Amino acid sequence: MLKVHEVTTSAGTLSDVFLRWEGGVLALVGDDGTLELPDGALDATMARFGAPFETAEQAAVVGALDLGGGRVLRHVRHLARFDVIARDYLVYDAPGRDPVCALATTVAGALDFLARAAQRRN
Image (cartoon, rainbow, N blue to C red; front, top):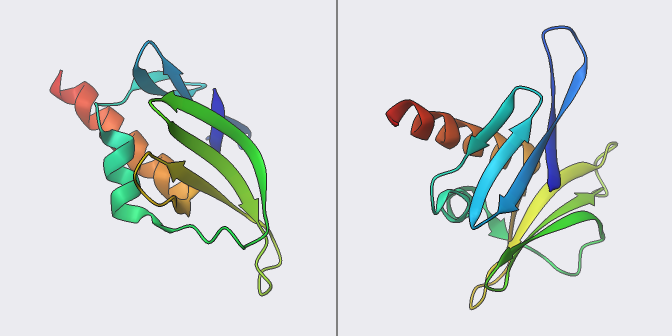
């Protein structure tokens, strides 16, 4: 599992959000349960919100999730020269494509929306 985000609960505590890849299924895992993602949700989300990842930038790798087939999702932390607090990004590597990155909070929110929408349809 890969921690991708954390949210504040109604009680004011922090709750971690993870992505889990198991048996060919990608799922969001949090304190309130597990939400399976529809096929292609991560690809579509990273295509929509991702931007080219500049490998020359200083980014500390927090963790990685092997998604099979040469696909890897990395959680990185980057402190830009003009920022006071480091930001968390997700970097998506897929064969034959340049790596793309997006803010972790944006990706987590979009994946949560897609998972809940898919759950309502079923």
